[in-house]
Structure formats: C-alpha cells, structure tokens
Length: 292
Image (cartoon, rainbow, N blue to C red; front, top):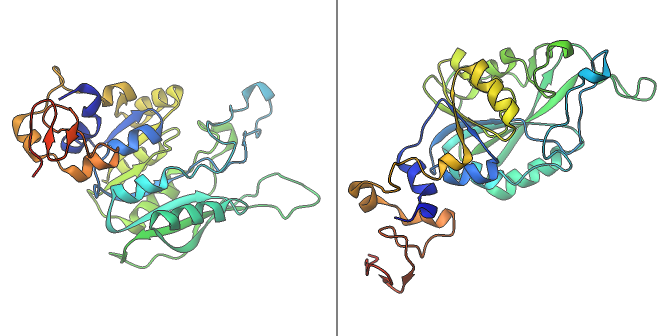
C-alpha cells in the first residue's frame, strides 16, 4: 500500500478519540470515517475579520483568527458524511452571516431546524449611539435525519455570561458552562463529539466534564499547545495523519476489508486497495487485484 493512499484507510480502521488534530480541517475531515460521530458542535469563522479589542492595553489585543475574511462553510459536506444518522449539529453564527451557513448546511443535506439564542448576560460594544446593545449570539440547530431528544426537551435560550475579556485565551472563546449545557442537550454520555474549529479547546474540556468523547481539529499551532496543556489530550500533526504505521502497511485483515465507498470520498475509487496502483476495468494494472 503506497503511503500517499494510506491517509483515509488508517483513520478509518484506527479512529482515535479524545485527541486534537493539528492542521486544516479541510485536510483532516476527509480522513475521518463516515457515520462515526454522534454530534458536531462548531464555532466557525463568521467572515467578519474579527479581532477582540476588549482590553485596556492595545498590545494585549488578541490576534485575528485564521480564515475569517468570508463565512467559512466548506466543512459542511464532510461534517454531514461523518455524522451518524438521526444526530444533531450546533453551529455558532451571527445575524448577518447566518443565512450563508444555513444555505451551506442545507445544501450538504442537513435539516436546519431552528435558531437557538445564547444570552451573554452583558452586552458588547459596537455603535454606542446608533445600535441596540448586542447581548446575544445565534446558534443554528441542524440535524442529519430525524433527531429525537433523549431527555427533557431543552428551551431555545441559554443564559450564560460571556468569558471576561481580560481572561480570554481565544478571541471567540465560549464559556465551558454554556458548551456543557449544549452538549448535554443533544448527546448522552460516551458519545463522540466533533469540533473542527477547536480554538483553545473549550469543547474538549466540556466533553471531559460531561463524560463525552471528543475529536478536535485546530490549525493554529499556538492554540494546539494551549489545548495540550488545558485539556490534557494528545496532539497529532497533519503530516502524522498520513502515516501512523512504522512501515506504511495495513494488516492483511484491514486490506481485505477496505470499503470502496471510503476510498471514493477522496476520489480514490480507481485506486487498488492492495498495492495502491491504478484499476482499469476490473483489474489492477500493477498487481492484477480483481475488483469484485
């Protein structure tokens, strides 16, 4: 098996939980197996080029987050594929970009059910003389199939005070108490929850506090170091995803069980699962493996 073709097979058969992948989610998500997570909770870049300036000293302002020039929606197709049937997704958003996220989720197959409100208790800044004092954020609740609450039906407004600006680790950091409540609303203990925009790892910490498993993805190396310290989980760099074996091979049993549909996710439907060669018709041109 050629190393360049191992990326999806290795994660398919050896998917780890309670870890953080360091890399671009658009590279990492295709390596995760279909129908493997019970919930997705994300806070993607809204496309507003945001920078937190709620500190007295300008030198202490948090840097702008990556990929925040336009609403970042390219992750929705893989999120849908990775989620199990009849599960739920929560996506933080903003009033002026929410429709773009709803459109992307719907196009990927999700059913956008309703808007949830996070009441932050205290208002933000903005136009002090021309805007209402903004005190909330919007959350999209979407499902893959028919989701049914396993416990008490939660209300659509969650009231938790935002993180004190002087204590922010990440410019868009959410309070763990809020995340824990959201997690418990649409998942149960031992479920696997995905956050592909992990930031400072608040979702991972919230999962640990509520006895859930998690998969985090974060592109910024600085925040991955914070996640390692704060959450206490393993960090796997993107290049390590491609090859976790010592010799670049799969076991004989794994090779026999490779699913063509999984290879198709990366456009590898004509790649031989035995040697990585090209399949022409029914046979591999290199090792003559026969496609059944």
